[in-house]
Length: 226
Image (cartoon, rainbow, N blue to C red; front, side, top):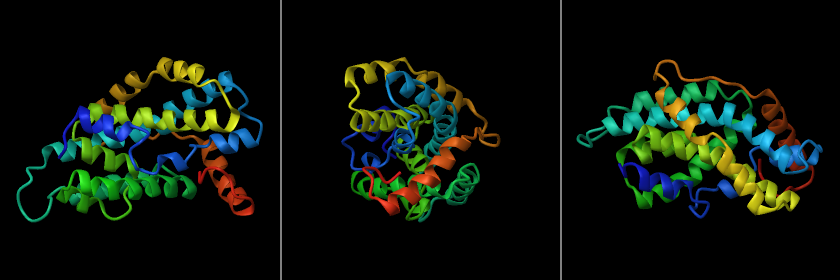
């Protein structure tokens, strides 16, 4: 695979055509409900998101990266297809909200189209047509810590950008907030998780807001899909 830090940088870049710009990670619904109004509120929101969705997603990215790193690239099909499918099912089980699952797979599908041109690989075929986004990142990066770091960062950088657009927050203050978040520590914890005991931290409020956002988006078009 592409291997390591450079691929992680490309995937974490907001300019990568992976569809992340269309998703607010729950920020739009929180703003609409008056739960998120300023930079301090955003800090609380992002901290909670990193500890739950960010940790779980980063751990699954790391697990997928470990499989990609072990793949020899020989033979007609990857012997790790079944293991990737098992990770996909486990991440589904840890994402009880259908809206959250759809958002993850929508981003995975969008990024997959770009990835096929940039990093063609049989492991991409093994992921299927609508992979969870963290698994796709893991397969492309093929280094557990780098993959975990990229996904942990994406779990908060997208919502932070959405907050700037929705609330007109000072982008310099929001960037300072991002830098202060324990992204590296979260990534290290995620990458160290045993493959058979990946984290399952839940975020019920985010799940409920994601489901509500789907309803509200149908009633009145919003800026973000999720």
